[in-house]
Length: 83
Image (tube, rainbow, N blue to C red):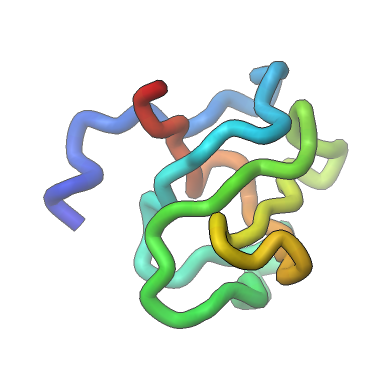
């Protein structure tokens, strides 16, 4: 988890996220009702599908190598990777 220190979680009003690479900041990412996100175990980086968080405060994401595996993750569990 120390590798995530200094990373800033996404904001609820952040836009322009579609296609951006994001670091997962928590050990077990969840959706808005605290259910585990349907992502492979140990994944630490995802691609964001949505342009901004939805009204439920989640974003659709997928592993970089598997765009068919879409999962919902609460926005503040993610931080943008450096470009």
